[in-house]
Image (cartoon, rainbow, N blue to C red; front, top):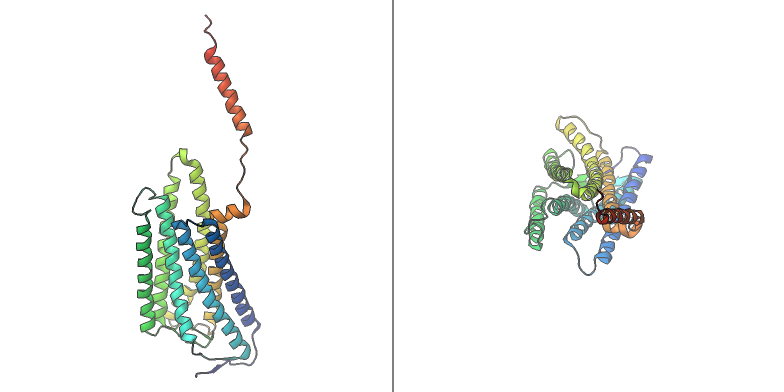
Length: 316
């Protein structure tokens, strides 16, 4: 058992704040994911739409990721408070599961974006809107996850980091960190490309579909917030990775800060998905009633005027 002690016996206050925010943030993420999935099960029962199943799949991925991060945060808080950290028998397993759920989360978000693309842009394509397409894409997602995580497992990418007291892919392991960042950037590029394509399609809809266009633009605003939440964790990780690649020293507690940013990003993402879902919004806020009395009166008056003009004999 390798035991690592802190250089000083003092317990920095910001360690406690960092770990506490991680614990609270992950608890909120898990709670939102559970409430969302249960709400969709209740609202969609007994017939579940493919779109809602895909969104539940993404929420499940974020919830599982937050669960492992919550366990890691509790372990880090205990190790920081005692001043002694060591890799326990489940440390590598937790790190491997965390990377597995990372991949599951980002591929699920890509699947969610693909579903939005097929529902808005390619809604007339029979194959893309069929259950067969959904099963094929879901199978491809898990085959891709297994392939990507195998690289980390067989090359011993997950190791114990004494600065954060966690088993993760350390930034000092340049090749493994670069591998994970490439996966992250490909996911972000795919998400951004899909949503930009949807935005261009919606903006070119004819004026007769103005209501539909306004609804989709409002949805894309919420998607922009979701992308912002996902980009936040990657910025700091990219900065630290490039700094280590050019032989600059990085703080020993760098992974603590990156995991905190990960928590903030994932929690913000699940909250954005939760509050932007149409069925849940209708359930919480109700449908907005449209006053049609004045419109009907105006329509009736116009019709009466037309009828009277038509029936009126021509005066010479």
